[in-house]
Structure formats: structure tokens, C-alpha cells
Length: 149
Image (tube, rainbow, N blue to C red):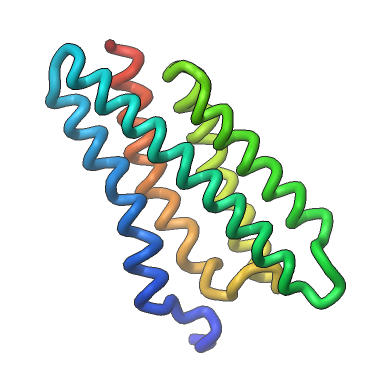
């Protein structure tokens, strides 16, 4: 395996750690009743939205390292992640969770392509799809819980 694609331990811990909270919150939201479930749904929405906005910032930060400046694909991806994150932050659950699912799904698809073009660390090609899958499991479960609330 190409060493540049090896996932650093810090990326495993810092990448999966925050994402694992989404399925945990989803399990708690399904287990709770009444207002506790609403609190957990809102907490999951807030956490997922903030993380997606952070991912947009990471994408923008990488563009500063480009020798000839940011590329249009980088800026477009950053804006997509940011806009979907903001929608996830302010919209009601039935709009927020689908926007967040689209955002995290987009990260899973676009970040490996960016890594192949040299617009993101090479290890993102291996890290992002399973990392975002963890988030998507949690977001889907949160959305389904919101629909039953």
C-alpha cells in the first residue's frame, strides 16, 4: 500500500470519534421518551451540522495549501458542505436530517476524488467513505426517529 494513503492514527481517532457520537445519540433518542427524545434529536442535529460545517472549513483550509490557489472544485465542495451544514443547523428535523444525509454522503463521494487530485490528504481516499458511513447510519436513525416523534 502507498504510505501516503495509510491512515494516521490521529485521523482514525479524531475522524471516527466525533462520528461515533451520532449512532450513540440515535440509539439514545430511540430509547428515550417524550421531551428527552426531542432533546437528543436536537443534540444530534446540532452535532451533525457543526461537524459538517467543520468539514467545509477543513476543505477550505486545504485549498490554501494549493500552489496555484484554490481550485473551483474545492470551493464548490466547500460551499456545498457549508450550505447543507447551515440548513442542518437551522431547519426543522424533517428538513435538517435529509440535508445532513446529503452533505455527509457528498463528503464520502467527493473527498476521495479530491484526494486523488491532490486537493486533500491522500489518506482521505480510504478514511472518508467508512467514516461518513458511520455518520450516515446515525443520521438515518435520527431522521427515522424524528419522523415517529
